[in-house]
Image 1: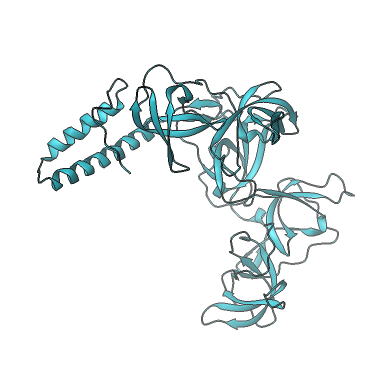
Image 2: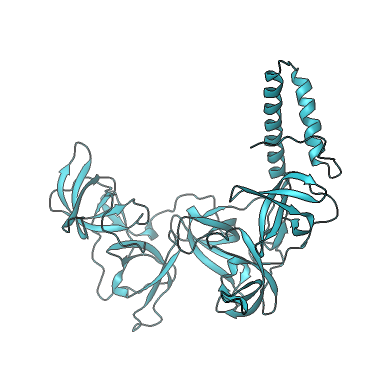
Length: 439
């Protein structure tokens, strides 16, 4: 939504336009999806249900108005002009805002404080952006249905799996990318705002100014149902968890979105709150000149308490066990892919598709901070790992027996595989006796 646009692909929603008609064309191009651009019909192609349109604000590579042929399904008439003076917008009104030569659908998150105020704050749930506008740049959102304009208040919202009070997980995105998810945060749906937009409360990240939870309005594409084993603390739930309030002096772990550091958690101390964010001082990260510990202001969604177990116990780790490995001043999530000796393990990092060897003393059990609670690997995920591990062993053993001219019954090689998996999963197993590596 913040990109500079010189050429785009767009299409139209209704038929019956003739040359010269003033229309709006919705874009389907990545980064501009849902934006309506003003244009005129240059040619009608009813047989193929398309139009050649001439954009009013978009330029072609040669410098003239951009002309392109688009599908009829995404072209609509121009909405009626807004009244003068502009209407009074209320909190959570669904509106269109004019930005970067197009009209974008959004939700009012801060209406004008008075009649003389000239600022309306609008969030765009699909792109997770918040911008301020003059009221003259805002118009009420209207839907073009059955050849007439209809306000959302007169339409029934389609059914949705997310109801008020539903537990969900919200994708957290890179700061410079509205499509790449780096993590998920548990939340509760507080309100549905027209079609695919939802007000959610991050209940375990309370605001520093009030006792109310941090909230956000997001598009449905950023939501997913909360796993059944998680719980979320929220006033609308009867059995609420104990929420964690981050305060000055608290030792926490902080995640990073920077390339090369995704998925890592770094130990830090909260120095002070900064609005809804926190200034933290890292324990092991230093400034570029190495003269002081690094301080940084971070969003609460990147903060969690210290896990309950900071080191692995005395028992050997199991194959396929999820762990955190301490490397480059941070904790990185991985899976034990091989036991190479006493208290020595090879850990596979899925995100980087790399393996590294670690000692027992720099590993700890992997926990996920979900809904105000620490959650370990679920039984379902463990069974999935075991299933695919068993299939790999079976296939490899069958290939080996076939290449050596051996023929075994299904019962025989199934028994072999079961014993092998049991040896790997047993904490007291001697893994040197039988180990099969797969590349």
